Every structure is written in C-alpha cells, then in structure tokens.
Length: 333
Image 1: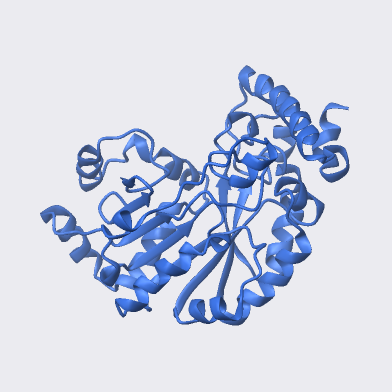
Image 2: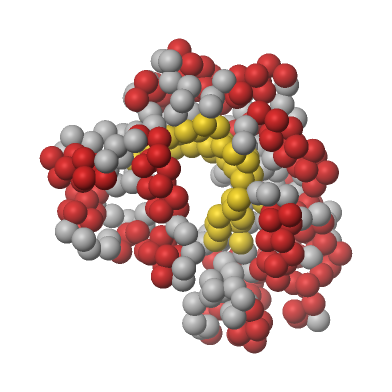
C-alpha cells in the first residue's frame, strides 16, 4: 500500500492507506524495503500477530491476483521508484441513510438530520477524479457515507467503462440497505471482478440498533440480489464493545450464508472499542476471541462512558438498548 495505494476524497489524494497513523511516506517505504515493520502500520501488524488476516495481507493477495506481476518484479519496481498508484480508494461522499451508533455526523448526512443541524454535504469532485488513472487501476474500493445511496458512484464506474477497464477488482463497501434499480444492477454486472462488501455489526435486532434506522430484512433481501450479479459478496464485520458479546452467533450466520468476512475493529470513538469492557468480561471471552489487549484502568472509564453515550443516542433516536442489545446492557444491571 505505501507504494501502490492512494486514497481520495473531496480534497484530493490523502494517504496510501487509511489505517496508517501519522507517518513520513518516504521513511515508511525505506523501512519496508529494509524488512522493518513501520510503526505507522501497527494496526495490521497487531492483527497478524493474533493470527487474524489483516487488510494489508488481503490487499497484497488481491493485487497479486489482479496485477499478475511476479513479486520480484514488484520489489524491483518499488526499489527503482517505477511503481504507480493502482490500488485506489475513493470516498464518494458523506451522503448516508443511516446514523450508525459508532459513526458521526461528519461521515453521515443522516446523522446530521438526527441531530437537527444544517446538512453539510461533502462530495468528491471531477477535479479530484481527474487525478486518477482509471485505465490502469488494478483495484478500486468505493466507500461513503453510503456509496450505493449516492448516484456519483455510477459516474465513477462509467469512467472505468469509458477507459475499457472492466476487469479491475472493484469493492463497494455498503451497509446493504439500498434497493438498486435494474439499470444500476446492469452497470455493476459489467465488472467481472466485483466485490460487494457489506458492513455488518450483527444480525436481526442487533444490526437494526447499531445501524439505525436500517431494516435487517432489507439487507438479507439485497444480499440475495447482489449474489445474482457477482460471486463475490462478503462482509466487513465491524466490531465494538457493544456487539462483541454477539460474536459467535454473528460469525455462524456468516458461515451459514456462505459470506466471507474480515474484522473491522472500531478505534474511534475509543469508548466503543472492544477493550472498553470490564476485565472479567474480556477474560471470559479472550479464549475464543483473540482480539483483546491487556486490561487498563482507562478501559473501565471508557466502558462507563460508552453507557452514557448509548443513553444519549437512545433519547435522540427513540431506540432502546435494553431491548435490542440485552447482552451488553445486562453487564451493568
């Protein structure tokens, strides 16, 4: 990713990878070429240390497949500086039809409406898109907001079609709630390596609480529709302290429905991170879920704060945590 990756939003190119912390890209590249693990990439290293496939590994495997370039050639290109931006991520806009519990108004126009504040719509523009070499993209990830709720995504896909690039790998990260038209489905079906990646926090009432006001029945119906246009339908499993107690049943549902999945750990806000739980709960889960770090006093502080924040959201949305996520609520009863 430090060599071939680039992420774009309304302000243009931002970073080679959204998971990287503060970094100097030249230093990161030199460390990688020297076989050193850059600290700015710790989010991936920590997952790999736990035996969990990281986003780094997933992207490397996908690039290997779709670029079809020998690894030695890739290394030589990196050393000689002849690499180019071919693994692209585009933040289409903050237009969204959901106010997810772990999200915020900056990333979702629906959250803005829940808070009853003036809607601020941020979208990628043509000047930014003109910076991207659509003819040579090997992998393209489209995220929002909710990209399938934003018609701009289809303008982006048309650029690929106009550049005769319908064989690149495309991943659309969606909440799975949007019913697409026949015309939209037809355009998506033109891409032979299309991945529909659905962000799911849980199933049934857990999903509906965490992804308010979306309906689980719509998501399951759309999954069936997605499977008609592509063989690659998977899940980005967003994990927080709120839904970690539902981990086993959610994973079983993914497996039952033949959905591959990866783990997306909530890091911001910190009070919804999986480690913001009582130590006893984490100890009871740690044998089956290898995702926790050692407990700290601050985890207890953050756990209490998470309860306060959920109460605030319940008042805003008219939801009821005790009904929708009882396993979590029972922790403090």
